[in-house]
Image 1 (tube, one colour):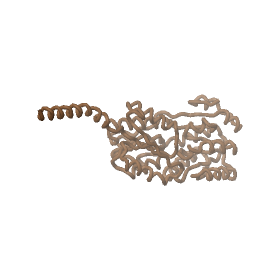
Image 2: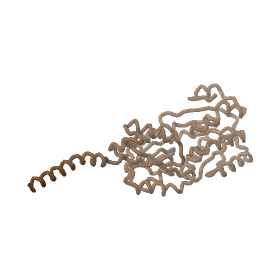
Image 3: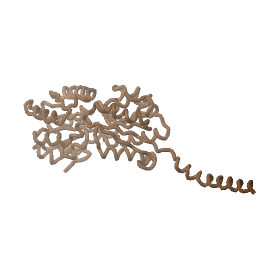
Length: 328
């Protein structure tokens, strides 16, 4: 009798374990991959574009992939500590926006895959070995083009043929891009007979001071360098340009949509979408070393007509005809 009872107990325990096993297995599903997104500002349209890119590869944020976002604002010296957090947590991919964030990520890890979006030349920065075969753990999207400065100045000169002096606003905190911009603009200005004046600004107060200096220097036009900090301050920049009645050209349509005069450049939103695509491909097993750096193929000219009228400018029909969008 005793052995019969023991056998019954053993079978009951075995059945209970078998019933519990599927529940335990369901509770041990592998954690979804985590992407660390590092940028200078909290731009919802860039985040949305990155999410769209991930979705193109089958990853839906909140379902089978997670993203944590960190922004340094205009305090670029915070990037190393922010990216160090991602490294400690061993995220699956680090997505970066802008040159300072990308350089900080590259310095922090040689193993975690990094996908960047930058307006700088990634080869000259030492981010990748070549555009076609980046090598290492980093690749991404560069909306850099050496011809952009000349093109933007040429369009501005077409709008204001009598202009003789151009002020160039750069952010000295991003020294690599600032030097590259000044060099490119200086060469382009010399070719069309323009003189340049360089203005530096890395805070809102310095932007105010730069515009005050414009009045004294009597610059005819303003060339705003492509920079994440300036993009975050685009309302301030467009407002001051209107207040000081100085025609300005920008690298992104974001400025023109809120009152800036004219922009010419590649689509930054599409660049962030491509960051999402590359991040998804890496999560599926591809190596950054084998993913070529994506370069811009489409550039857009956007003109704000009400701003032109407020500045007393008549936009030539030939220029309007070439615009990808005219804001009425």
